[in-house]
Length: 405
Image (cartoon, rainbow, N blue to C red; front, side):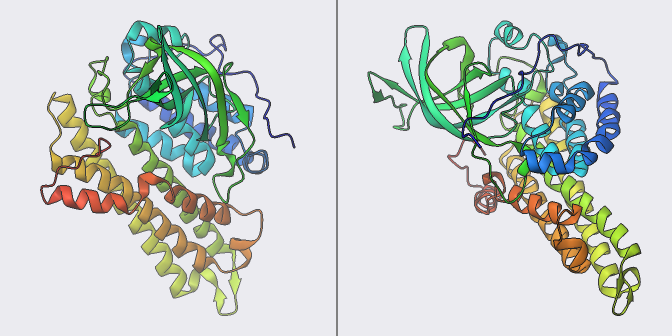
């Protein structure tokens, strides 16, 4: 296999997707996502072996309206509240973890473009169904030039890169080859929008789980990016007034929806296994350990999901009122997000072990894929145990320096 991946045509501006909108759009998108689940499940092996989402799955998600969820209403989007987005991502992740992951990453267009001039955002997204991916972590280099930046770099974990129209690329800013620094001494950074025609995909995604997320490396060399297509995630002015965009890290919460969706899929699969499987002691569904595992996993996921949605609703209500989030609210936001991953792993592990050998470890298997996917999701820095340390300090009144909190 060549290292350089050939890509299908990028998200089309003229792909026939209608510019839908309206107050019932959240329910429509959720219903469409649920309706797409059978197609996504049927493509499971193709998703795994291809290490990216097949075109039919991408188009089903696009047609459902998944990629447009965070687009502002004044640009023709639904501007779904975060709880509605959470449910859509969760529904797709129940069908397939990699699809859920890409749905989360590739529906960030409205969030990132809220940091741009909105006329520029309209130019970048002539269709609100164009998906966005990227790596905002500043691992690239952006040389300051007249009118913008000349950027070069190689970024890892470009989830959905094979079908994304735009990738956002984090860079350290330099001038005459020397890194520029802020007043506090930290490196000056910038995040740049790069279109699908401008980056090269490098085939690197060989992973234990989330194999179908297509999280390959991508690279650009000496590419000019106009200043108006750049932003700083934590210092740039928020250019859209909607409450959905007031919290710079709002998009991260859909990460939790992926983990909990995978766990729900594992629980559902185990329930079917328990009914069908015979053991040395009799039918699995009659065994106490199997019943306990199923009940405990269900409670763990349900409790974590409830805490997530309760926390998210509280945060969003504060933003709708035009108020700043308190330190405790910010702490609970990150605690709920990280806890969801811990709960999802615990629940999947419970039913995986209770299922025994045959339905859990032989390939292909829904349960073993859930096991691999949820453990890979839990390795993300968003679910790092460091979160609890920082958030715990916030509950005690410490205000962290980290802008992510």
